[in-house]
Length: 490
Ligand code: ZN
Image (cartoon, rainbow, N blue to C red; front, side, top):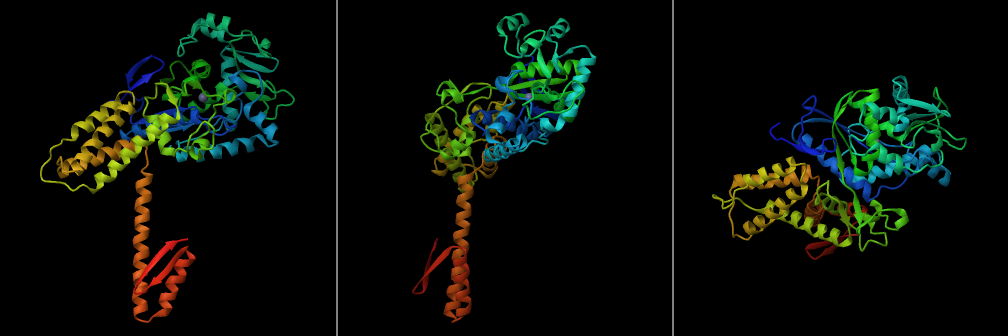
């Protein structure tokens, strides 16, 4: 690889040079959605962050196996070990089969994030399809002596684990603090300690998603699925595990503990976390009344929104902040992003019309190097975007004749947009595409109608009528003028 990517590792809390275990192959696992509701603004950020990492690794020549799971069982309310399963609760409310709820929201999730031009992962495993793998992992942890049974449920013994290993390796949390901070909740009394977490939960009689196991009829704990599926598809050791910062504790901390006992120590090299999105400075939540789904954003149908925003504006807005910075959503910020994106796309259209000169007043290679430097510095997308804005000024000066560019530099300039804006940042040029398509359609209709005019001149009314009728079937209305024509689309 020519480029050296440095990435912030939540485990070492520093930026580290990215060195895959088995280059050029890279294994990357990202925690996907729990599918019990529509995808919202909070889902867009990890989807886009890891999409850019996926795209950049591929651009650098790595062969990436990207696994992003679907949580369709075991994620209980409030991320706790008690309470109802989020999907089962929704199924009961809507009188549906739980898998019907999951499938509906999986379809809707895909539809929304495809609009954001997020690439599909290589594998998208479902938790409910990997119950056996999860049970095998539980058995290994029991056999190693780090889990205990209580009333048919199996819990991970955090206290015993922390005598030998560091529970808090990733999050920096200290067990004594956890002990005093965790309140005793219903159903937790069957645990030895409140910080122990469930590997298997015995199902209450009303619980609909349940499987037979050696311990009870029940279902796996939420943290287990990612450990089991990650190692199943990416091997005992793999390169990257990612997700939102809200998953760092307890979800990822628990994964490390499970992996350490069932697979081995240090099985994952880089832990990567994106920061959260706030709305007008507040955390987003249904109870706060500031909940915005991606569908709301695309349609403008939410009282918080002043207008609708295109998926590309949302994507660009998210990439204008570094993935580890907080990002505050507001109408003002999104409208600024919209203007910025339009400026870049307009400059690109202008760029395509520029003709090269024999000499150049501008050297572009330096800008390309700087864009790579920014991406290599922990995916610094806002810096890349600022270089693209600098280039729009050059493009406008060249177009106005104030600067000159030769063929070599013109090619490089176009490449920077193609590589960084379109391939790596994943922006699509919708306006330019639509514009080009409609221009092409206009030209073709004009051509057909000129042929019809010729037919009429030759008194070939069969052909002339045929063309008019066929166009009309496709919604194009032709109005005959003396020796000319007009047309419109119905
Ligand atoms: Zn996960």
